[in-house]
Amino acid sequence: MARILVADDEEGVRSFLAEALEFEGHSVTTAADGEEAARLLAKQGVDLLLTDLRMPGLDGLSLLRKVKEEQPDVEVVVLTAVGTVESAVAAMKAGAFDYLLKPVGSPAELRLTVARALERRALLNWKTEARQSTSEVELSWGAAAMSPVVEALRKVAPTQATVLLVGESGTGKEVTARALHQWSERAEGPFVAVNCAALTETLLESELFGHEKGAFTGAVAQRRGRIELAQGGTFFLDEVGELKAELQAKLLRVLQERRFERVGGTRTLEADVRWVAATNRDLKGMMARGEFREDLYHRLAVFPIRLPSLRERREDLRPLAELLLRRIGEELGRPGLRLSPEAVARLEGFSWPGNVRELRNALERAAILADGPVVEPRHLWLDPTGASAPVDAPAPEGTRLPSLTLEELERRAIEQAIADEAGNRKRAAQRLGIGLRTLYDKLRRYETPE
Image (cartoon, rainbow, N blue to C red; front, side, top):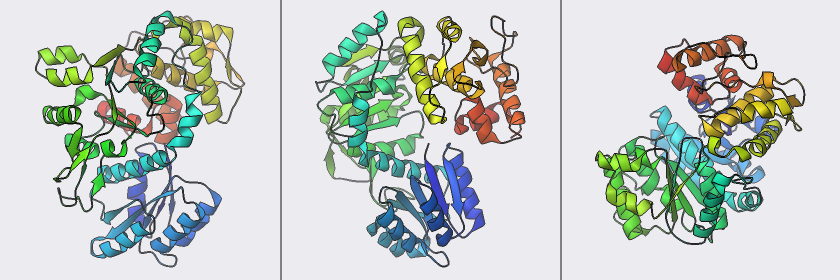
């Protein structure tokens, strides 16, 4: 998640913006005016600045110019009142990514604008990142189940064929899509991903195709869509099985004609992208029930590849766990973390219903619990239902978990984590190894007091 600085002289606005962004898991710092924001920027790096234009002393436009002069890689989104759109236009000419009208319509609008700004920051750095990560991509360490997968990926990568990745949740579909991109002739182009399950139908259409000014309420300026941003590169459509019928039809047209229009627009744009889609759903079963278009399926499944689950690739488990633990240690500021032989044996004896994602969560929790550089079996909480064990009572090695439902196990783990962190939800989420947004979702679902 990103480091964001919010500068606004209204305390209520600052709190609203900070809470909405922290809900997404971002690390947010606030400043009451431009001078305080400038001092914070001089002390700490941020990925994005969200600033009001009108503040006493150093105003938002001056702050923007200062940031662009001293830290040009920081993205800036400005806030402006309805009657001062001209100031927002001036800010965009000075280098701001976008602007939001005050009062901000909804947390969703704010999060979407911030997500787009952060994506642009990533796209501006994609060449360097691609060069660094190309040598790091490792899809397998010799597992027999992965050999035909890697071979197929290597063969299809240099072509322009549309690839459909199918597999259980957590099997590494986005990592695989990035490998395809890096091994392709489009490796020098951008890699852009959209999760179809993360946005409403209306927002998703705008995200995919972009929109023209005035296309709908709140469309105060023209915006390029993700497909347009991916020109010359790879477009990854994750959770494609979640697309509603109307969007399925529109996507089919783009795949067939390689052209599209922005929402509310009439100008036809080229879709020069390599398509990679992914799903954990049974698309053939959905077709039989009339939930997924057969013609779209055949357009997406030109080259289908099934990614095996982690339990099917046991030979990969140890080197993958060591790689993940090494990265986790670097993130936590504790390089050199390693697994004991007994911990490796316990990992290898587990079924991993949540696949690689669950493995990483288990290792992150273990890294937090381990006092020294070695992760032991007692630090690993492995539950065959996929729920976390209570923070203060990890199950002893070899013992069976009580006969509880998944919901009850999860509820107890959340309640215990929040209690141990004195009600701090952000630290509770970190302790559980889940994102802050996921924690909020579970709190609402289980009606656990926040």
